[in-house]
Amino acid sequence: MLDAGRETEAYEKYALTASVSSTGLGTYLLIAKKYPARDPKQILLDLAESGGDSGHWFAAAKDGGFLDLALEFAQTGRTDPRTLSRASRDLLEKDAKFCLQVARIAIQRMLEGYGYEPSGIDVIDTYSHFLRAAATLGVSQDARKDMFSTATKAKQSGAPFADILIRQCSPGSLH
Image 1 (cartoon, rainbow, N blue to C red):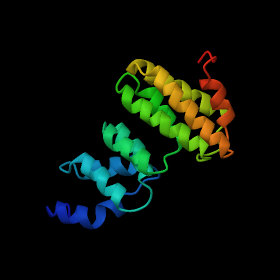
Image 2 (cartoon, rainbow, N blue to C red):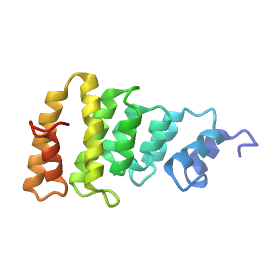
Image 3 (cartoon, rainbow, N blue to C red):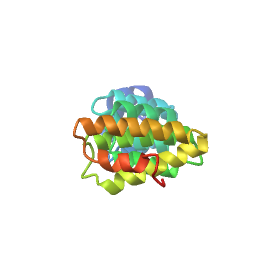
C-alpha cells in the first residue's frame, strides 16, 4: 500500500498492529520511520488509544520530546516507577516542573506497591530527584511538606516504604 501511494489507508489499517517492537519506544520509532509524513505526536496518541496501558508509551513520548504527553501517560498509565524516576533525574535541566511531577508520581506508585521489586533505595533516590526539582523551582519547603503528608497517609494504609520516606522528609532530615 505504501508503494502504491496509499499511505493514509496503510497507516489506518496496519501501522499500529504491523509495526510492533518489544518496547513502546521501539514500536513508535518503527512507525515514525515508516510514516515520516505523519505527525509524531499523533502517532503516539494513536498508539496510546489503540488499547492497553497508556503508561507503556511514556518513554516514547519523553524521548520524542513530548513531555506534556509523557506526563499524561505517566498520570493515566502504569509506567514503572523506576522509569519515571530516571526521567526525573535526566530531564531536570530541561524541565524542572516535569521532573517534580514525574518524581511525585513515581513515589506515589512505589508507596502503592507498583513496580518491579522497588526498594527503599529507589524511594530515596526518587525523593532526591523530587527535591532537586523543587529546589530549582523554588518550592522546596512546600514540596517537602506535601511529600511528608503523602507518606504519613500512606503509612496509615500500611504502604511499603512509607517509614523511609517519612524519615527522608522530616523537618530534621538533612535531605
